[in-house]
Length: 248
Image (tube, rainbow, N blue to C red):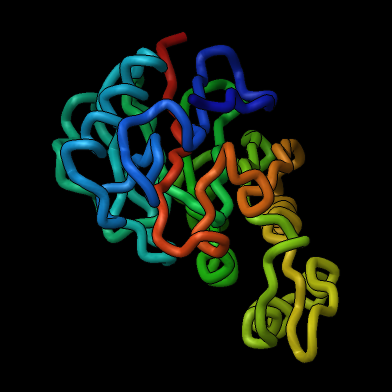
């Protein structure tokens, strides 16, 4: 039902990335769809969220965001105080509160989890190309209030550069302001480009000062049995990246 991130976060930091399997939803949301905004039966989405919360023994209900491919970052307060209405619009969240669960939803975009080396603060960001170009990772690092050198990051499954073909507008959104990002693009068909989202994220985080960045490397487009992919399937479910902290 989930992947456990392999990164250098301290033992008091807990994280998971859900797979598409083990839920109750029918096609095209089969089966562990956690997105309430994609057209799935709300009762099935609620059942899936309960199922993953129970399986992971989450300390509280995740603070779901109303994601818009932007750069807004929300601080999540005490566990149990979030309510059922999605926070937002926002595409990243962080918390210092033990037991509060940050969550982002993806189906090809890159999930990025962050944690301080001492476990005092954790965060999660939704990094599609628009958010990356606009600075969602830099905004999240800044909001967390910890020197970037004291943070570690995990880049989860996303669409890989073998399958993410984009136009010149996407490449220009990065290269125009940072020529070094050209290395994350290789020529595609005609005037299009193959784009490496994880490479762009790693570059942005490193430029911000992070030195420990772990990469899962799985491709959501290629692995149909494990992952939802909007670019592959169109309407589909959403997976979640979750992170929370416990008391030291």
